[in-house]
Image (tube, rainbow, N blue to C red):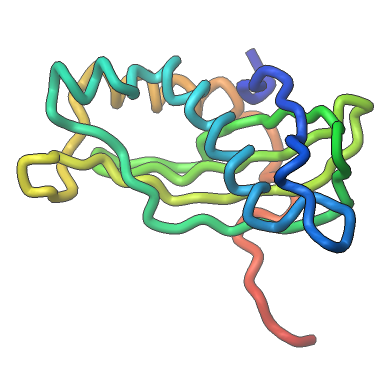
Length: 155
């Protein structure tokens, strides 16, 4: 596999539309988060993992780039790929695509593995770490995504 994980289609909900008649900026993060939950399930994270291990993930940082407007009723899906990782965290990148194929936004995040007894950042179990490494390896030959590591500033 040389393509990133791809989420199921999600529909823009009417309540997510702002007074500019497009998707409010906060809901891009909701969509990215829902798509990441699908990817996380393939890695072994989620409610069952929390119940069994008392461990989970927390988002440490998330950056969104808004590239093209989304409107009420549009349907989108998000890619998810691991750019880097270590035993306690992973750096991910997502692209949000309209069902017609055009790129609407990108999201880049740093996720921490958390022991909820602290809570504190903790190493991942070997099985989870292996799945993260495998997901990264599946797209290792792809170029760095456009916008990854972008910073905000005036030119």
